[in-house]
Structures are given as C-alpha cells and as structure tokens.
Image 1: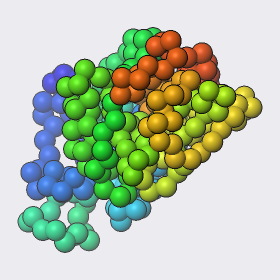
Image 2 (image 1 turned 120 degrees about the vertical axis):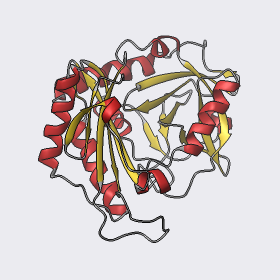
Image 3 (image 1 turned 180 degrees about the vertical axis):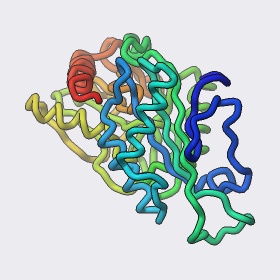
Length: 287
C-alpha cells in the first residue's frame, strides 16, 4: 500500500495519506475492534461470504454493530478493489467500536462504529513459500481465552512471529498445555504416517478459520481421512507432512518443526494436492 492508494474510512474513499482516525477511537485505545482479511485473485474476492458471516459473529460476541448493511459492505469492498485496480492481493476490513469522548474501561453504548478498508498487493498464487515450505518453531500460547473472536488484539501473535524470525524460522506454532493450538495467523495441520489429516477441533481456543473449513470440506469430498482433535508437538515432530491454512496463504506446507525435518524436507504430495484443489475451487466460487 502507498500513500496514494485508496482506502475507505467511515463513508469516504480517500488517499491513504489523508485517512485519519481519532486517537480517542477505542480500536486504538483498547484494541476494541475486529477484522477480516479476504484474498483477491483475478480481481475477485475469495470465500468472501464466509468471511462476512464470521465478521458478523465476531461483532455479535463483542456487542458491536456493523455501521452499514451487509449488502452495502460488499459494494464498498468491490469499490475499494476497483479503485485500487487490485488483481491479486488482500482486502483488509476492520470495524472498531468507535470514538469516545474520554478514555474509560466501561464500554460505551452509543458510540458509532468505525469502518476501515484497504488493499495490499501480494503474490498469493505463486507464493515462493508454497514451493519450498516453511520452518516453524513452537512458542507458548499467551493469548486470551476467546481466540474464536477475530479481534485486532494481535500483539501476542506478533511477538511469537518475531520470535520465530529471530530464530531463523518462518513462523511459530502456539502451544498450550502441551498441545498445539494454531499458528500466529493460521490454523495448524499435521498428516500422520498412516495418512490421517489432523487439526485441532473448534472451540474458543482457536480461530474458526475460513480456509480451514474449506480445506476440510475438500478433504471430505476426496474421501480423505480426517481427525479434528488436539495434537502434541511430539506427534507433529514425527508427522509425514504438515501444513497451515490461512486466508492469504491458502494451504502452506510446513517442512520443519523445532528443527525436526518432516519427510524429505520438501512440501509433501498430499499438502500440494490440497493446495491445488483449494485454489481451483476457490477461483470457481470467487465473486
């Protein structure tokens, strides 16, 4: 994104350099907001209806309201994409509780929510990380207990990501009570030696990933073996393959966990197959 790119802020389409939000917005003061990231391929949004359903759920869990109708929001999304000429990248959407007259822990009942959208160009389809696979390290999961709500409270995940980079890795898998929860911005999967695809069951302790759900649906349609359950690092270390799923990474192979190399150290065949299937299906349904 550059200063001349178009952003949407509370009813206006503005150059990024002119878009300004009050320092008294609760999103800034308390991370009191939620967000969604929708991938864009060939100028079309991927899995967007599911992202907007999850957005509405996140808002409801926090007692917030969308300041526009869902139909209006889709039109805003399309207009931001059009104005930026985005063909491939991401569309970021954020709703905060809004501006307040004074800083207070008490949640205001009459604040007008703030709505922000912007785009970023990125190579999603031909991501070099998908070709070589990523290395992850394990990090203690220190986040709050409502990770199913997609809030802007991302500092613990950001710290974990930086810890991985400092260690020479690409990402971190978060661990709580001996079990992997998820990645810093993705859901975590392993494939056992006997071919079972394993990922943590849904609950308050992980984000209900849109790409996760799409991949599980595809795996079911392909009659692949699935287990939605917690798994340990010890299981991950001896997995045949591993991968993560996320809105902008799609299906991303993991080839090393805490220095334990999986398989031959290259993206596995089943992971590659799931990525191809996801991209084919997502493009057919894009809008």
